[in-house]
Amino acid sequence: MNIFDNYLQKINKLILDNKKSLNLKNLDNLKNINLEVPPEQFNFDLSTNISLVLSKPNKIDSNDLANKIKELFIKFIIHFEKVEVAGPGFINIKLSKEGILSNIKDIFNNRNFYGAKKSNKTFNIEFVSANPTGPMHVGHCRGAIYGDVLSNLLSFNGNKVVKEYYINDYGNQIENFVESVYRRIREIKYNEKFIAKENLYPGDYIREIANNILKQNKNIAVNNFKDSFKELKQLSLKESMALIKNDLKLLGITHDIFSSETDLINKDLVSKAVKCLKKDNYVEEGFLTPPKGELSKDWKKIKRLIFKSTLFGDDMDRALQKNDGSWTYFANDVAYHMDKINRKFNNLINILGADHTGYIKRITAAVLALSKKKVNLNCKVCQLVKLYKDGKPFKMSKRAGDFISAQDLLNEVDKDSLRFMMLNRSNDVELDFDFDKVKEKTKDNPVFYVQYAYARINSIVRALNINLNDKILIAPDKFNPNIYEEKILRKIFEWPKIIESASFKYEPHKIPYYLYELSTLFHSYWSKGNEDNKFKFIKNGKVERDETLAFVFLIAIVIKNGMNILGVSLPEKM
Image (cartoon, rainbow, N blue to C red; front, side, top):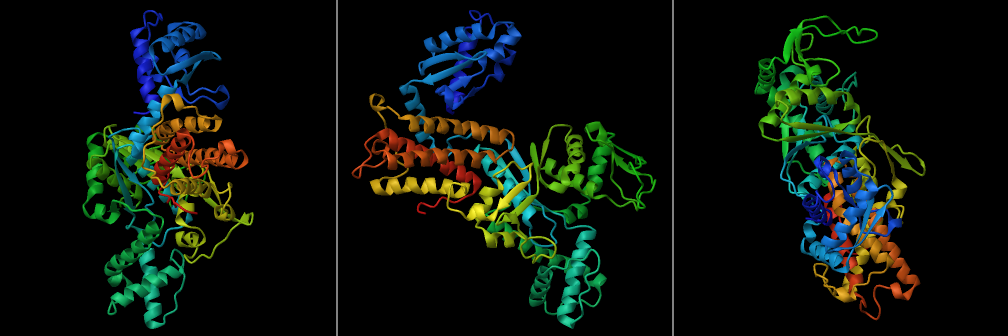
């Protein structure tokens, strides 16, 4: 329970108990009532839209209703010390000292989960799923961090979350990858020149994979690619996935499950998925509509199995078979999602790259069809990352061949900075990653500023020889927060709202934003103490006011919970 849920329950009960005196006949909108932290200029602790929500369906003047509700608040909710009507019917609320202290006590008692919006859903979050043809690149980093932090966020709320990686280890790209390794092995073993023909992978990492395979398999036969393919595919994928898993480890990311496309094919799950769709009359044999504009030379009017995805909101029906009758990549993906549905997840989340936006409607349609609309699939797209240094686009060495690898990036900045800054903007907009800013030890570097706030708090704790896990008890008659502490307290109370919004909308970027704002308030308070002795935290080795220590501890609780969700470390000294 948090401050908003606690008082919202009391408000809802109060309205239901007094609906006759308030002349409320229609309470269908009661669930739309919000309780928020009002803008700073109002100098109140809480604000509700209750009058605006209930006045319209009941055809009552919002201000008249607000004034009646105001009287009920003052009379029946003991923690509501001052209540005022503002604007067209908003009601602003100032808590009593007892109310504030009661909420502070609740935070201390539930410090490890303060802010959590309790839930017990099951989530499967599939993220990264980079093609196993080499190491991760910069674009994968953003999706990897986003998926990992979203998983942490939903787990923080008590949900069961499984983090999954789908290995696309089937099809032409894998054949090209294996052939690249095959040619590098022959280059090393027989001094045969590697010819970088179209679709092969020229990066130096291919040579590393080839060397690793040869070290462990000195007698491997590479006389004929076709004969070597099966064994070499297995060995090449093992090496490639080792590269990817190492990149993920360096980013602080582990997956619970690695699912293989090849395994789905071998288990004939594609045929089973198509059969399931056929049973519900969602698949038919027919002809695709020709693509708009100039026809591709590869397009042919051929009868094939087609999924009626337009029945579920897609723009067009989708082919399940290629021209030669083999399954399309989409058909394999349908089978994979049926497998996830069969594993009893009621919420599926796919984290996709910027080039997969057009794929969302068809796979969402497939999940709706396969689950009989019982399973939710939410696809989140992570847009591109642009690198900058010295105010200019930054080009790093491309060990990978034609892209900048995750390891190149981690050679420039540490994991903490990378994780925090990759979430510094919403996932659906492009991100400018400035190396200079990330390395600064100033307010302009958000991750440093938050870590520095926590380090400063720990310096106070060391100076006083106390423990951050201690509870600070404040007597109501001694509770008199100053203007800085009031701002901090309201920001602390806002934390559950940030968690709720970030969780509901799958927008974990709201957490670093909030932590930066909270840290800014703390640093401003600290700086004021250097200017004015009455605001100084420690005097003669002691804290004169318990409120000061309580607020410092509250900040530490929120920063710790937030940074744990982000997967970013909190050094006690900087």
